[in-house]
Length: 584
Ligand code: WT7
Image (cartoon, rainbow, N blue to C red; front, side, top):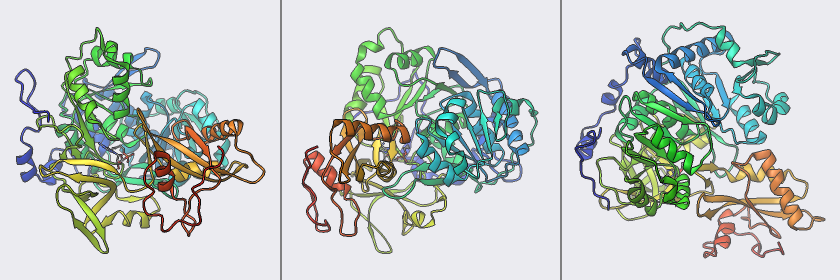
């Protein structure tokens, strides 16, 4: 156990007495910490930016952007408020209505932040698409979201959207961040902004109006679009304060990409709603660059992920040499299991333990965490946020049974926190299946110990977590099936020392095709071109056929058990005898 003692050289933690706060918490009080709009409304972008301008902190730095080639640009809160007002005005001029979806496909560029905030101010719904997605995941999400506007770069547009534009009848406007010319259906983002004024009346959104759309994956079917409403900001602000220990003026760095939920909830909203300065690094992971940023920018609070921490551990302490991380007050991690060695490595090497936090796209904000003032059991995800009731349960018809401490079951949360998703877009049935007896069921297996700490065990479905990104096996299988040689394909997450898991494909070929290295390379390349490097399989193995249930579903669990040399478990639903290897 890592015992916490308060240290009088550092500011007092925002959450000092976990037990008392947990007992006395009310969401109404948390809501009262938000500024709100004059008519009882609430707006995420107003809470993130404009409230600080109104409070006289407009000149404070909201966003410090570090370009991959060494550029450095600061945006004050006032500047971000003006630019996002302009973008909201521009959307209005384009005829975008409240509730319409605005997608972005871009790396970590300043325009992304302006788009997010301006979209929210206009009452439209902001939907990020990860820039390392290939054309197919981009198309599927643009279709399903019915996006009317896409903000992107010329390169990403050409590579991933242009050829499929005719499949996207809802997509009226593409705004390019790096082009000055307007042509039909394609406009310049900056020309649009320049034509608008800084002035705009305050937003008019209500707490339950849709604000964010985040795609996530399940075992089957197309990606699910989780919908969040404006009052999610109550939870973003609160967790930024209590879990990340943010306060106005802090320098904060979240390394997650805004193409995923962490990079929006904690890479934009929560830190701004707490008056911090966001550090945004456009470049990809590089140990020396990262240590230099932590040092030079005097980062106070750092939110990162286990894959990155494991890579820093691998690079070793010499990369740290000559850097002073003395400004760091708090370090946290999310997205996949954080091994106990990573927690203690943080303490030994960087002088602080990593604090694991648990949440999901669906929960919208951190639900279980290790807090700055609370003792850590390395390997545990921590304890529920005050205001959140978490339990380990077993589903039964019509409800759930709570399980006693130490027993493994599904991690569930009592319904009704402000950042809980309000639906899966056009998927009412899948949404309903997430709830039973007043509980939200997470799909994660976990245990809770006698002290109330939660421990992650695994998933109860077949989704794959690679470098913290959730991949749906079905989306990958579908693409491989389009190749003329492929009869069947099944994906699993294969354990990997750094990425947690990698996507591994099992493929059965059609008659007339022979397994071999050339075909393996071709199939991997085919998948990579369509799906992009973030989603495509890294390994591929040929098999004679895939294990299936009698009803024809691929039993990925068996593929995985065989890969890992584990017992096969219950195979009573297995059809035929399908576990023989081919001569791959
Ligand atoms: C899944 C949710 C967390 C927001 C970004 C990812 C896994 C998340 C932890 C953790 C072990 C974790 C779970 C969860 N996960 N945090 N601290 N320890 N596993 O959101 O893409 O919706 O993924 O990530 O399996 O269900 P997401």
